[in-house]
Image 1 (cartoon, rainbow, N blue to C red):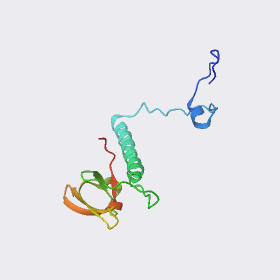
Image 2: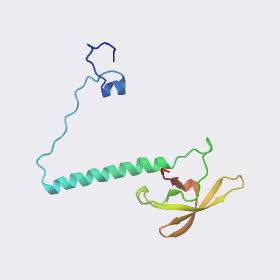
Image 3: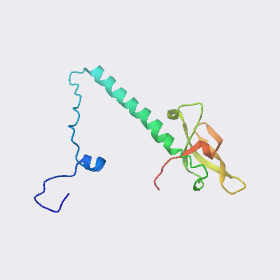
Length: 136
């Protein structure tokens, strides 16, 4: 905070969040030491389900960015793994596919792709796909 070696103040999360130390005491952790094994299992299962619901609603939908002509994006490539958006299924049940072939439009941009899925090959428009972040 300051170059003075006698200044003992430290940077806290409050400094990062609001620019100054927080004045409120942290909330107490609710401890449940008296849970039996079945109740503990139910609590852990509920936490996992809540995490999955949150992840699928936030992260998977974020992959399908809707830039809509405001910026150009790179064309898809053969071999790219994608999530296939299906209006009739919840996001947790969308299928995975790998791009097998590209069908460009008159302007040279890819409009439709042929995908290999677990059930065979299908065609989908690119706006129904979300590319998975893959490291090279």
